[in-house]
Length: 117
Length: 115
Image 1 (cartoon, rainbow over the protein chains, first blue to last red):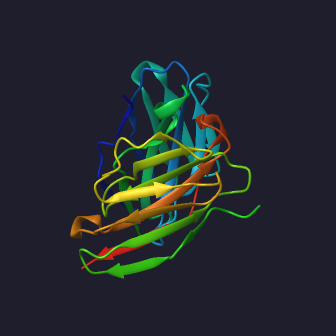
Image 2 (cartoon, rainbow over the protein chains, first blue to last red):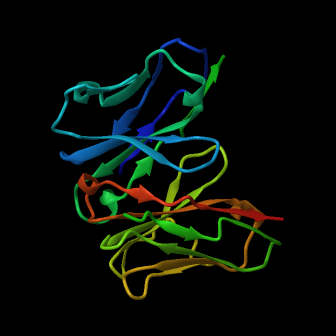
């Protein structure tokens, strides 16, 4: 069975602070994919990143960076110099490669990030 | 390319009434998913189709929920009769194939309120 744990539920920071959102996952698949999505108040799920299990390189995209560590089954997300527009709920998600039910996307419970001006 | 289309955007019904949601995936996407997102929680898979066949419906409350994808394209999700706890956003997603490699595209969702 697949599982995603986002232990943090709510985080509040002041604008320009850096913030890290934690994600820990469980899967028996050897090939799997990890995702982060952003859900602003409007409700749509905005895709941020996909990472496959064979690529452990960290990734940076503007103010966003992701740290993938297979040894600790973690895929953490850092926002540098946070902005008010970053306020949203952030979901970490996992899908396996095997056919059938494990191919579905399993979500964590989400982290509500509030960035205060 | 056009995204995943869902309708209606909002729906308010009384408990014990029935309701149906519609989803049109991205053209050519073989896999279609229906997720339920209760306020304050992450989306939970209800049912997964590959073309017009069901891959996983283990978390679909089959006594009241049903879904179909008859021609392997668009899909409908029905609730009959609705309960208060069915109040949620229902998200439809589609993908080229079964693997996460292909990614997932989500629709804007249908927000259901049962009163």
